[in-house]
Image (cartoon, rainbow, N blue to C red):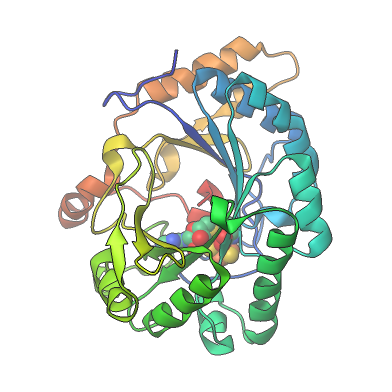
Amino acid sequence: MTQLDQHCRPIGVLRLSLTALCNLACPYCLPDSKEPLGLINLEQRLKIVKAAVELGVHSLRLTGGEPLLNPDLEELITAINPLRNQGLSDIALTSNGFLLNGERAHRLRKAGLNRISLSLDGTTADSVARMAGIKHGELHLAQVLAAIGHARSAGFDPAKGDLKLNAVIEKGKNDNQLLPLAELARNEGIELRLIEYMDVGNRNGWQPEAVLTSAEMIAVINKQWALEPLKRRSATTAKRWQYTDRKSYLATIASISEPFCGDCNRLRVTANGIAYTCLFASQNSGLDLRDYLQANSCSGDLKEAIGKLWGNRSDRYSEQREQQLKSGSRKAPAEMALLGG
Ligand code: SAM
Ligand code: SF4
């Protein structure tokens, strides 16, 4: 039976971070320059995924940091793929795309990956450099544009939702990229997902004034290309629209202006095996799964521990953000690249 939490939310998605490291330094994320202590290995990750699937997880997202930096990625996916017979229906990857060449895209597809989300926050070298925290954006932009083609050639079909583009939009920083990004995605027939700038971690200096809301983003794009809203699928992060000319879809992740804690089904596990139940969780609130991952540990114990963590879960930070920030009661949160975005 699927494990429920204190608000009767069933567990459904596992976001597994494969590394806290990244080859970029996006100022809104600011990853660490070294891995956390006690990284877990491929077999241990497999054990976690198996236990999560037994508890009701149907969708796995591999993330980081930058997951393409992990040399075991294809082997891990190959090992996880048979779990499709036990209820896992989706194996997805979120990547900044820089390292996604043609060969890698084919290998990932062959291993069993069925969905890729690529992150790109602008269509000019300047905007890309600014948002990625790098000096020159030309090469990065070219690589990510090429990665879109490589993913498509490997069989990730955007028309089926297998290939999407993520963009974080920050007021005054890259909001002038909204229309160019929408145009790029429309021309590629790819769903663009516009992410509101979030107060994850301790380092990005987040201020509410820097958030461009979903409603503001949609208003800008709707003026240029008419959009019609679609019904929200339950337990998803996105609000979706379709262009009335049917060219493609658009989505927003409105965690700040329209929180979706009510049916959140996502469990997160860091690269060193700490499980968290919320993207905005405090650093010390995770459960160290390594205690249950020793060679001689019983797999039932791991499943029971994750089940208990989920069963006790009552967090709904995005709905409480304003109140927690006002009262100063928010505890130091874990960083995004560690938790896995
Ligand atoms: N490195 C990969 C990437 O960038 O796609 C995967 C990890 S990254 C943490 C996952 C997603 O989180 C990316 O789409 C990124 O843009 C988003 N993200 C990171 N920090 C964010 C923030 N402060 N607000 C909103 N989205 C953020
Ligand atoms: Fe790296 Fe992704 Fe964080 Fe950017 S958002 S610094 S690409 S982990």
